[in-house]
Image (cartoon, rainbow, N blue to C red):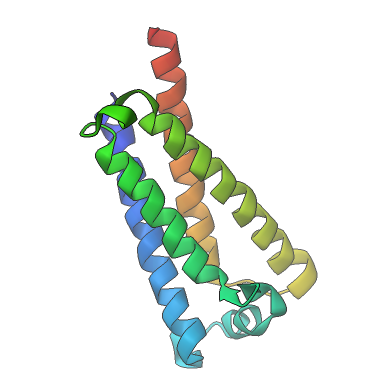
Amino acid sequence: MDKKLYWGAIAASLVGVAVSIYLTIYKLTDNNAMCLSSGDCAIVNASRYSEVYGVPVAIIGIIGYLAILVVLLLETRLTPLIDIGNLLAFGMSLVGLLFSAYLTYLELYVIKATCPFCFTSAIAITIIFIFTLIRLARNEAEK
């Protein structure tokens, strides 16, 4: 196991959790001061795309990042995850990356406003995806 990629994915997951918690607080309190001088955050936060069936997208982010984090942390400790832990983290990060790409598309081309915190989350999930993909490729090459 490449420790740098492993710990990098964990660090990116923690960043994703932190940003998602911040965005959840912002969504629930509607405190525009949390935009940090970016009015676009308020536009994105108020859009109909900021929720999926009434659930804030940021809460979905918390759940997703925490799930990836738990799998990564347990992949060396739980027997069922030893062989498939990174594959599972890769699959979850792929779903997260696709969802994030969709949300970024909505920001740029539909809402026409960008949120730096959303962009940070997109970068975090991209890093997790890349690191788990490299780990997966290396593990397959070793077999």
